[in-house]
Length: 339
Image (tube, rainbow, N blue to C red; front, side, top):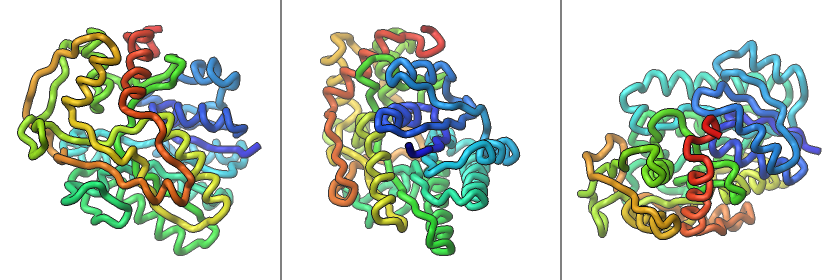
């Protein structure tokens, strides 16, 4: 039974990936500081899988606390989600983002090397492409992140490549996510950010359920058919399964490589709102407001490389994303802590 360490494992993508790992026979240990998540998710994972991950409340900036986790058990691989993740927030607090995301990763990598843990799947981001001139973007597209958040992701990718060059045993998959959305089909788990959400889908669902008074649509003057930004929305369970495929592929081939994980199709903000209204039967109140710094007009993936090399393909469309999100939000209007 492979032993997997998941940093940020109580977060949105991390927790859903824990489900996929456990259901595929892995022994999962979670490290999280709970700054933007709830420990209640661990019980939900157990309800779904029958097994609760071992949990350590540790911040990756706490090198001593993290070292104790590595001393307690050996890990066959690490999946690294932990980090600050809001584009707009990173524009106003760049030092916090550089310190947290990069220093935390350096602590993790030092401990991996010290304990001969040489396999890593890194949670990167499509923001490394910045305001791409052409979509769909491939892994060979220019890398020009437009925000401190995106730059931390690219810097970490560069750090990991340098480690891999210096140590042939170090094997890494860099997974460039597009826009994760949706929830587990059970309705027991979904996206539950602290405070006002930064991602679009929880804003839509919280506005529909009355948790937010309305949805702010940032910009209606983009050069797109309806004036709103176009993104590639990928179901969180498709994304979770991508991590399993990445682990399997690293085991067969080694080395280091980057992969786009997305549907390969873009939808505008207004299209997503309409799809959610159709799935939920609720109207979503919204207003247009100014663009957010760091946002781009159009960004969607060419996932052909992941399809071919990882034998992975996103299977759940925007309708499933909206249906699963509504099932989660309707059953948990105040998130994990309100249940």
